[in-house]
Length: 243
Image (spheres, rainbow, N blue to C red):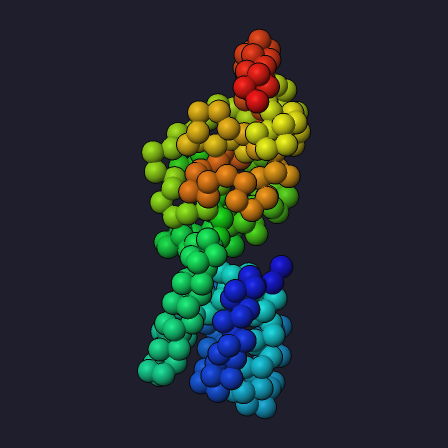
């Protein structure tokens, strides 16, 4: 898994300050209750000689975690009673948010992933079949994490889910639906743009950077919409004729 490169760079930039300032042994319980560390990892860190050794050990563990864990770590040290540690937590969090936005990686403030219970950083997957169900991009790929028949909105930017409505039922070969990037019939996951009247991507093309406007919202459809054969063929024919 591992942290995003830009967060890794922030940690490397302030590595010495983090190690020297943060009283790691004093926050082990918080790190465990936030599921950043396992009980075994907490016990291992407790056996370290001092705060600095525990810090070195923890930072190596943190680098293997998700971006959400880094932000949770920032929140924990922001709540410290030590003023310098509070400032460091705010500084790291602000730097990560700024760098993430510059690289189109957003923090969905107040939106919690229903699988890992972390605030969502990066892509947010919002279930359109459930009243309040969201997944981060790391948890969304976990097999059977949620009903495979449910439709998810793929949201890159916070607030982009407003005024969006659920599509019809969702399956594996999307007969008659052509990818607007590679111009092939979509097999597998179909990404349907909710901002454009007729724009679809296959899962291979959807992963291409800047393939489409990043502010647009995509429905992630695992199953094809139920429509008549004539409607499907007519839509495919129109797409081919206008190229």
